[in-house]
Amino acid sequence: MPPRPCVAAAGRRTPWDVAVVVPARDEVELLPRCLASIVAAAGSVPAPGRTHIVVVADRCVDDTEAAAAAALASANASILRARCTSVGSVRQLGVDAALRMWPPDPTRRVWIAMTDADSVVPPDWLAYQLRAAARGWDAVAGAVTVSDWEDRSRRTSEALVAYRRDQRRAGTWSVHGANLGVRADVLAAVGGIPAVVHSEDAGTVALLERSSRAVLRTSELVVTTSARRSWRAPGGFSTLLDQFGAAAGLMSGPAERLDDEAILDVPQHAPKRPVTP
Image (cartoon, rainbow, N blue to C red; front, side, top):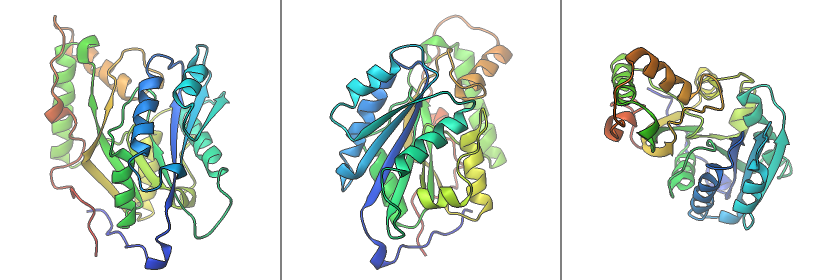
């Protein structure tokens, strides 16, 4: 069981500043819908004006930056151009840029939310995370589902379902950078996001849990992501699906949607709501 969170003292109930970090590499097609969903989610938090979106355009050769600028024309946002060597470095660059938006203040509360450019977040994505933070959770690790199985064989989707079932039986689960949030001070205390080429999301959560931080793993908060073949980060979700497809072989016809099973990235016994002392 995760550590029990500590409820914030009454004197610290100041509004959260929220930074949403989105790495993007040649994402001109999918990025606009991702950013539109984030802007909508920002409108559901108590102080939407305190939300800042940071897009890190890493080694892009298409019009990703222009697409981001158009999508965020009316939002509080920054678009960074980067040439990083790992997705972990890209995410941390976005975190660092976001934190420069606010002057150092020991009473300031900053929440970092992360997703991917090929993903769409639900309207309550940020509100859910902030409710968890208010109850004392240091981080929130949500689930993902797939929107576009059409580019994959049915056996690939079936293999993902079997993989999820095996995880639950073993008491393990996946962590997704497409659906992750963490308190900024807690992230800094564990050294930030690991500068690795893949699994930086799982590495971040591992650092938090080794430091006895309260991480809420939940299948209630679901982000929709892509099953595309043209992956951006080696070792990520698309690479996992590639491996399933290669192992299972190809079957004619599009894959069926198997959302009810495929989104369950946490064990059945995981707490569905934050637990307070």
